[in-house]
Image 1 (cartoon, helix red, strand yellow):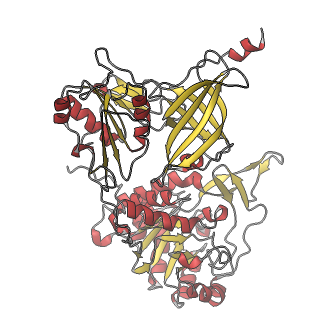
Image 2: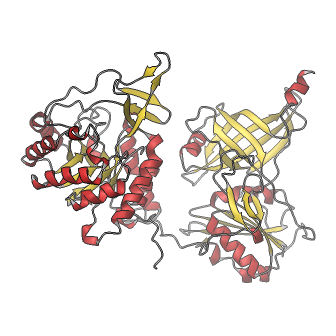
Image 3: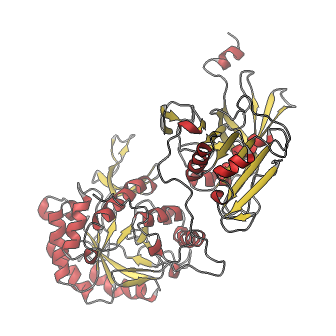
Length: 614
């Protein structure tokens, strides 16, 4: 068996390998849309070139994300590689910068390597009987919404010039239309910066289809746009094909993670699509495009301030306890006065040396730490650290820890006499009378310590909840009933690390706390659940929630706020990016401006699903 035969064993039509970036540039007039160009040399005759509508899985070769990102082909061109004599495919992708994976792709430079798998999925095709010819009244209609313009623009460029009409809908400006040679091009923008101000329903309806005598419609874009196109095409009795976007893992039909509901059952977007006949798609009801808030005027500045337990924060970003010392450590790296608040290192009544042995180990998407509440003691905190914290503009918050009820009470009495405006009560500490189980593990023990602290201080209390509690909602409600003015969640998640060379646990205490991006989805779920439970209480009994756990970016922060958090705390993100909190503050403000929000309260909890009335 020769090398060529060996190379082809188990390998077929698709390209799977690395390629070099030729260019990656921001699209003119857009803040978050990039054009990436690369090429793939097809080393086997069986490998195929992409057809309009197909996509590739892309990932930076030096990536911190696990999954490749499905990106539709915007433009492709075949040639013969002069060095090898093999077929080469030039590929261009329009990429919307949204999360970490796309941000990595949009940050690539010429010469950087990317991983490439494709082409994947099916493609656009013309039904029998539809004419592809230049006409003042073409039979083909093509619609693109936002980044969804890429695959349909690629399809349009494969058709005869002026054999189709094209509708393109954007938030601001336009892009991806340089290869469009339509009989008629209609552009809509949310802000009126180009074409007609408005959305697709303002320029396209069932009457449009009938009046234009379209025989087939192709569209790609947000689900609401696709649902609308499906509806009006059915009203006009016009054939329609929709390219659907979906999160996916494998891209080849194996994992079943990208299925959608159709009249033919659950079909895979990566393998059965992404192009589907609209008549089999089943979108959720009320999916017509909704009018979005108009972006704020360039001169209008959103109010990012929040109120927590009666205390004013100039913004909702707070440095988490245990990650920021007492507010002084990072002053040489950035202006800490820009933060909304700072939670001090957790303090106990007596000074503590903390845990022995290894204290921190890096793991995938985070770290496990076993610090052990090393601190100078509350009296020394009040004497030495608090005065310097109070000179900073962020709200100073004391973090009170303890192992016995008496130690919590004594610490609270000392803090009550101080000038600290807020106390964060850490009930993740071991309860020595319960065999080391944390105070926050049960509603009964949590209620006990919160009630005791409430009786000895008039200062607002934020209770910090443990994610290790079997029922965090019950613990949260018990804390509120016992006098908590706010809740913060979550603390670290119990974890274990093993030293494979020493063949024993890394930490002397065996178990330690996992934090970082790995816990974000769990923390977000817990914040969502707790807010959902709080919303069932009478309005005068509800308290604000501060969310934390794996928040790295402003997008993470917005998720927590949409889930119902009035503010957020950032911890380990600062270790790898000291400016993380400043970037989050800027990002929240930008999100509010682009989405037309003038205050945090306007979108706080907006993602909470309201149960239907019984």
